[in-house]
Every structure is written in C-alpha cells, then in structure tokens.
Image: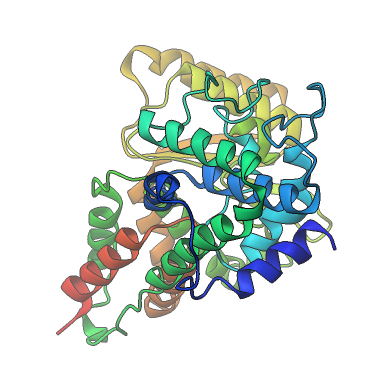
Length: 367
C-alpha cells in the first residue's frame, strides 16, 4: 500500500470520530492545529504526510523530514507525489504543491521541540511540534490523530460550500454596479489570506469571455490559473494570468497589484520575466499607480524595453481596465455568473470571502 492509498483509507473512516479515544494531554494541541488549518495549511499537510509515512514505515523517525539528515527521508517528495494531490482531489485544505514550500517548515533541521522555524504563532508552533513528537513516540495512535485532523478538514470543506443566490433583478446589472460591487469586494479588510486573489479572479473570468468574443484572440487559450499562494520562485509563470496563441506562444500576460504602488523593483522583476518568457504584451494593473519618485525611470524602462525586446509593457489602473473590458463583452450577466461560480468553487478563498460576495451581490443586484 502506498501513501495515497493509506490516506484514502483513513479518510474514509474520518467522517465520524466518536469511536476515538486518545490521551487527553494531546487534545489541546490537536484543537490548536484544527482551529488553524485555514491559516496554516502547510502545517496541516506536513502532519498528515508525516503521520501517513509513520504508519507505512513505523521504524522511521519522522522528525528527520529531509533525506540529507542522518536517518532522514524526503517528506517533501512524499507530499508532492502522494499527499497534496490526494488532498486536492478530496477538496480538503491543501497547499499549491507541498507543505514543505512553506519556508518555516522547510528549514534543514529535524522537527524536535527546540526547532527554530517560526511556524506561525508560538501556539501553533508548539502544537505542531508536540503532535509530531506524539506521533513519533505513540505510533499506535497515529491513525486516530489523522482521523481527528482529517475530520476537521472535512468540516471546513463543507463549511466552504456557500451558495450565492441567483441574480434577482437583471436590470441592475450595469457596468457601474459591477465595478462598484467588485471594488467593495476587493477593498474589504478580510484579515485573512486569500483576498489578493479576488481581482485576479475577476480578470481571469472576463478573459474567458474575451477569448471567445474578440477576433484578436481567435484560437487563443488561457493558461491555467495558478495558486495565488505560490511565490515567484515556484510559480513558473510569467504573471497572474497568461494568454497563449494557438501554436503555444505566449501572447499576453497580466500582473495584478491591488493596493500596491508600482515602483522600480516591481518593473525590474517584470522585465526579467518578459525576457524569460517573451510575451508580446504585458499588463501591470494597479489601484495605486506608479510611485511618484520612480515615475520617470519607470516610463524610461518601458520605452527601452519596447525598443530592445519588442514587448509592449502597459501599466494601467486595475478598475478602469476592468471597466473597459466590461464594455467590450456582449453579456454582463454572463460575466457575473462566471465570476460568482469561480468565487464559490475556489479552494484558496475562505468562507468569509464567499459569504461577503453573497452579501454584496444581494446589495447591488437584488430586489
């Protein structure tokens, strides 16, 4: 039996945990991990990976989670190959590729109680290390530990199934109302990760329509919308959104910067991506414009890039660009429908985002 098969077997028995008995001293730590799954998906994923590996290889000291450690193994490889893909399939909270892409968890030190990585709050770090230590020294309880945590993941998945009421008053679907609703949705201080993906999602949805309706995009396809939790060093894409021609050439890229001024550093990084991926056109869309002190130099770099490379780098307002695109499409209601479905189904967005969009939709487009 491999790691995936074992995970699926334990998952099947995790819908109910009323039969589980575990030592009371570990319960507070499991509660902390369970309460922080949404914020600390890496921690959740790593514990699941280590637990599954301990069941399959009981003699392995799972605290030594890298194969360059004496007596260690590659937890990241196990996670990337078996655990995270399975968690995604089950629609459980997960990372984009691996829990070990979280810098605080990938430090080259064993997960002993004196581990130096930050791992979120002090409480989360302590709980993580206590749970790992407990699994290592009480391997007969490992399946129970995993069932408790997976049950919490299942509950979160079900809580995330938020339904947004259908549009009640199509007459209210105007460009101004759509922009107003999106601006309010984007600008909310959610105090939790995921909000930065919302404007990216809006452009990804409208591009689905533009590619179908505009002659300029005949035969073009959208690149897959990647995880918004991936860093530039791991994303392997030129921007947040990519449009490819029929022969696979990169035609257009978009980088979305909400409430971020465009400065020399951002432009330099984008120019590096342009030279690497060679798009014909690149948009940087922002709500704050170009930093005043950097304005002249940024404009100079844009002109120089066009002369040397040929790519047209366009820095523009996020909402004005979205408003312009809305004018180009035939059916505004279709855009709202696609966007709403995307918000509801997106695995990186939290319940609060989905509930808030339901409220905003009702406010702008309800009776």
